Image (cartoon, rainbow, N blue to C red; front, side, top):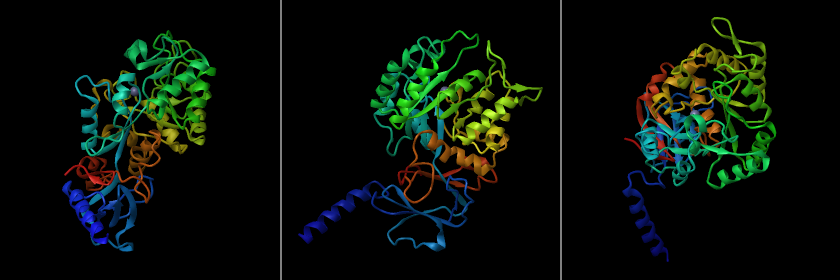
Length: 405
Ligand SMILES: [Zn+2]
């Protein structure tokens, strides 16, 4: 019996070692500066141990032994950072790339998780086939079609297949249940009147029914908002995360914009709103990259992000790719815009890792700490000195596997 077991173990080891790093082997990432994604100070000369896809140690090298059988990944001179997250994208909306090609591109850039915030039902089904993506693709979280009022955004702008129209609270709850059954862990709403105020928007009772149902199913509710009056309504409905922030004029409401002056400073009620959001833990994905490519000024959104950040609000990095031709990949431009808004490099990295993972409803990701899934990158240099170091990848590790050379 003992011999049979040994033979079996031998066969198992052989099978495991065929794919490079055996799954049961410990991975030791040695000598890099550790940035764990929480915003905590960096740990120079660190050790990260990974077993069976999970981080088992992350801290100073001298405080832990490296297991004898460990596979060593030398990170000397580099930095170890959680896998990056694009918390707002549309993976099924690329004109000339399949969702899998998009996900491959993300993974090769060190983005181990991307969030799809608006697709067709069919597009969602494609993502739902393989949300974790194995060694080849980034993980995905997804919302499916946007729940909206009949005739509401995004239908008139992006096509009806991106909408899930509902009339009243009962239909709304059914829609949330349907998305949940398809594997969605997020609900996307749109409070969007359109440039002339002509698009219908969910009434408050229906919006609240959606939020309640979603929360009952442990889903997070994320809301597209471009006008100030719509931010006020979204917050009243009890949503979790605001996408974009107001930047376009309200067609028929005062104030038309929550900014004044040539440099667009915030009006007091908007300032208070942002402080209130921060105190309630409502997160923001400002998608400044997308705003920077549109026709409106960035001064207002940058001032809003600065105020929200000063109030200790939680931010997530999201690009809105492929809007305005934004490429899937490392969201470097978004990170640079957040630096411009006054975040420190450490805070930007936290928004692009832990902040993104939380916005994607993946509390098990975005931190390099014992018990967390081992999605991380090793980069050359120090991204706290130069954020573009994040593009100098030495290795991408996903679920404890080295997935790129
Ligand atoms: Zn979007």
